[in-house]
Figure (cartoon, rainbow, N blue to C red):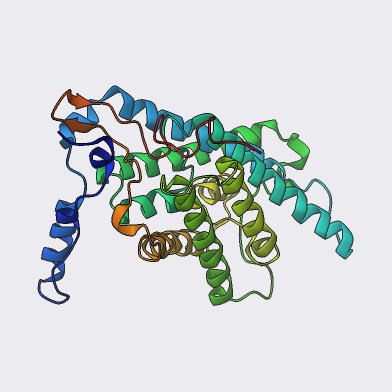
Length: 315
């Protein structure tokens, strides 16, 4: 009979062990997809009640994050000219996003994992902890949540201030080259993803409040990136305000850099931890058990196996 840890571990047989250049790119991609968790078929996963509850939760959490975080970016007056005032604005935005993420992860982590960021979702896909179907549904829900949140924020902003408020739309600052903005967004995304994965790793205990740790990674990222790019490292958070305000200058950076940072961050964490061979990150779908048949598994950061549970969240 399989042990509980075996139920949530990644079998060695699922890992890609073929030598490089042995297959065509199409065959390599097919084998990679086959290596993803297949405990539920596509039809079973799409008809699973918890799957759609998790998708709805990602939509709601991203909506709230957009309202809370981007709301702190509203500029109803002319941009600050003195350094002290500008630094105060940067700190306000950083704390709003960081504490917003920490609060929402604590609230919804047991349901969907509290990703709220396509970069985090893609990182879990490339490290084979969630399925392709869940990844696609999460990213779509996150983008729609970001759009809905930006729309709500637009409605809550006084009519005379809407054109100048900005609504948290992101674009590189004047004088910042595209390559520089890309590098800043990429590095901040790597830090966020590594932090998320480290707090989801059940092998790492006694790490304090996990949701707050994730929130602080966003705070640090904002303190670094805000003067350069407006600090996004979250495509869904930039997508909504970009549509509402029609701000598209170098918008591709806010997709490519965070997603690439998520991929690199996920692979980096997966292959730099000593406990890699015993990695048991909880997956975002149910597992089969020889004793109980089909058994519900929540998501990464889920009930009994989560590292963001209330029992472990101690300040």
